[in-house]
Length: 365
Image (cartoon, rainbow, N blue to C red; front, side, top):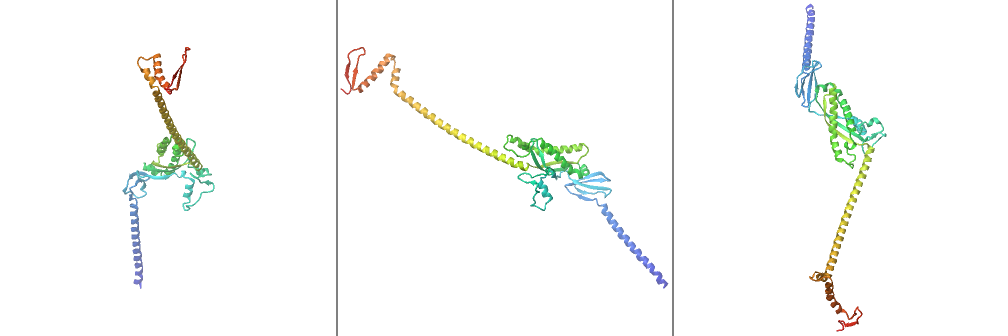
């Protein structure tokens, strides 16, 4: 009995010891696996459109492009993934969004939703009675109002500055772009921002101004970003492209359309009047030319007839040796016989008082 009783505690001690050893083995294996995962936690593949900043105890140790990255695990080293230098990031300037756009964005499920009653929506950009909802309208240099919807595309030029100010990059870009748009639009008239009055003179200059608008806005935005960098607060980004959609307020658009229709109608009527005047001028010129040619022909005919009738006299006048009274006597002698031949009776009276002589005419012969 004593032998059996003394053997049971030894067997129990062996079972507990074996269980403890197994537990420690499983725990060691688990800790080893966790340690391996922790050791290789910062070993990763960097995509081709990104790059990695490796910080060691909070300071940037190195930067690596796409490929396999091997770094010490946290908290020794930390990996910050930032976009590559040639990758363009898009930012919509939602402050410039119209009332309808913001409403649709806030209620994406309701595609047929209408705006509130205090918002009137006609041709053009909707206008709200709440001034805070009209932030997208800007004042131009000629005291006109224009609405902009914009998308900004930027690239990461300084990864360290971008990683430090990551949470503030897009809000700062929003404010910088709005300030740049205010400055650029204030220095331009309405027609150099969008096509509002094509009937005005200088349309080619306005077209050139509209083409330069995006370039000037891009340059002004980057200038302000550089000013932040010079002031010691860099964002680490540069703007590479600006997409703009310009419009005029709702009421102004209908007014501009009416003016455009009226000006086009006036231009059409002026063109018709000029065409009618040109046709009338051509018809008048044709009539004048015809009358002139007719008058010239009649004048030439009269001249020719007069020359024909006076050809005998002209021939006598040109005969040599006949001048003055001799010429008149020759003409009289040539003409009198023809006249007397046609007379039935001829009475000749001497002007000095002599007796009258009656000669028989041609009919009396």
